[in-house]
Amino acid sequence: MTRVHIQDLSIRFGNHDVIKHLDLDVHSGEFLVLLGPSGCGKSTLLHTIAGLNPVSGGSIHIGEQDATHAEPSQRGVGMVFQSYALYPNMTVKENLAFPLKMAKTPKAELEKRVAAAAEMLQLGPLLERRPGQLSGGQRQRVAIGRAVVREAKVLLLDEPLSNLDAKLRTDLRRELKQLHQRLGNTMIYVTHDQVEAMTLATRIVVMHQGVIQQIGTPAEVYDRPNNLRVAGFVGSPAINRLEGQVGEGGCFVSPALTLPLPAALASRQQGEALTLAVRPEHVKLGAEQPFAAQIQLVEPLGNQHVVWMNSAGCSVSAVLQGQPEVADGASVRFGFDTAKALWFNAEGERIPT
Image: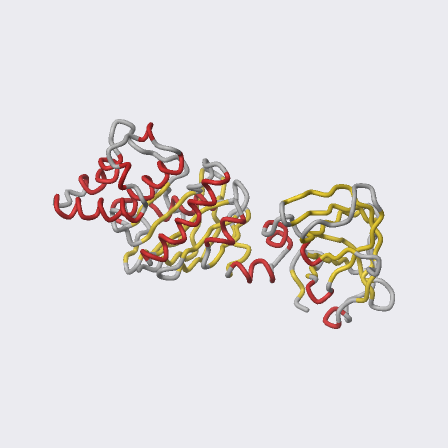
């Protein structure tokens, strides 16, 4: 198992700063997920760890090695790309063996590693097939196997599931987590899919415009987001955001609702801008609830339904279990557990309560 330590890293392409003075410590043996929207710098960071991009400033250590300017082949990492990047004229076995042949691995050891990877990834019956005869999920397993056979200290995975259909993504996601449990090596995984991040990660790194917004376990990032960017990006449906201000008598006032501020915000100045954020699963419907809304859409999701509402021009969503007795256009009352509400200041930073 190998630690990856990144200190004060900067990456610049021309006059554009993609990564700005980034510090990151990837613990030995963890499954770290880099999460963020397109263009946030997550793939650039991964490729730089692999040695595919030059470093403009700072350092990268992989284990005890200063790998800042090392060649990719000298870093002891395995890379899995979004595209499978398999050799179409080679069989599965030949594709798995190729990096070992290039490293002049003795034949007995090569055969042993290929057989072990094939068994681990359920590729045994496919060893004599060529990539064109495989499904997308099988091809991606071969690509992962090619990184595994190298016995790399660190596995780097760049959105490996994004080209697969929904069922294959779910299946291979589970296989990846089991693979990490068996291998125990350090994995760094890039995705824009927050479901992948929440289900796979030991810790999540949320990025925006080349800057880390938060590092934490899935539960920490979901329950205690540092700012509105993190709160809005993690969670589906997205978190409800109601903008308002401090009113008279220590109340929060927005077009949709008025309610007392928690004790931790009691000293806030009247007129100060605040944002109240509530996860959809914490919103409740019922005649006894305090706030009024009109249903715009009921979205069935099997054992759950998402109810989309309008309250004085503000959009509010609720996730309800089972079959709700509501219909499009109906007037309803809604509320939520105020203890689960999140509060953010005018700069979008979370205020602890």
